[in-house]
Image (cartoon, rainbow, N blue to C red; front, top):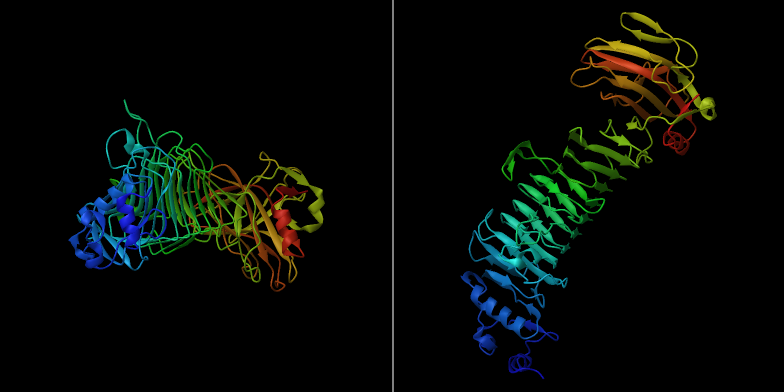
Length: 538
């Protein structure tokens, strides 16, 4: 049986569908509604009490979807039922503003841990005063139920002009954001997990998915995550556009994940972000913002099909897959690691180890890249016919430098660290080895197995394929044990003379060379197949 309130709404045409309540635009029709509902919608009057009354009424009578008309509504609305959804007349038509400029427009306190999601759609949340207030907050209440305030989905919702767009202070499982717009907030997302305390349950800040949204003009961080609680789930950002944000794109203070990867950043456009200087986030000062700050993340961070920028890693592991690494730089501690799968060719030597190289997007005229790759697992004679030159061909190595030529003994016939050539470079000096003679159209793969000695200070030496003219870009040598650089380049025209490896250094450096080789291939795919095989010729 339909109760009297719903019967009157039906007669007035207020029901869109079973359980959906529409607010009339005119004061005359509003007078016919139960509860004597009146909304000003002028951006000045406080509509909190009227909207809360109708929300409470819909919650008591079985739930439904409250449909707001066009207008600007100053509100402080508390959501306490998982049976009531909220929708507007469109992201550009219906705007909700915090009634208190320093307060919260919508707070969620759903009272239980039921997985049912509350849906909010087709409206805009805007700060009453730029840079102040919170637009949506979950878990701000007290008591047992505060930690179970998750399960909210946003579709086609705008968040702009506030200190924080979405804040989850005490964890909460379940946040879905799709086709939304975030603009000009200090934090677009601020998520914290709770700590285990006597008489209360711990709740993590994971299980969060943001997709197909525009995330721009964040002043401190696009996403701030602090969830040290064990079993923190997984956070996924998928298919978003991130640009023009001065603050950190991702600031992960702690994330004790139960799944690997912990954070997934996939198919995301990233441009002109992390530009702020002298930035303070959560009481910590940074000389400059970055793409990623990650500290105490217990499972890997996966970045896929996304161009990353500068990353700061502290006890964190980062894995990239199918990424253009042109903008990537890393500041990491000894407890962190960086690796790349299917890394795209570009100018420079990216930090971290590439387990595989992808075909370059613009192969014609390619002068790079140099990737650090895993040390070779074996030697193979199958590739000897591709060798143009190698340092261990059973003869001494000639090192040519401005003061003359130095000859060192030959290397052994296997990948051995104990028998090696030594190249000592003075500050601002260079040295040249090699005598490869490629032809026009050849694809060259260069292997360079080395260890940089303790004499190296500051930025390490560089190497490049050179002769009368430079052919490749520069590979960066780094300290920290034995490493192998793999270079890839294409010969556009037959060089006038032999090519080799030119070393340059601004600081005095000592290089122990375990082996070097330049091989040629007729096509790009053959060159990549060899480069990704992990073997050394011979």
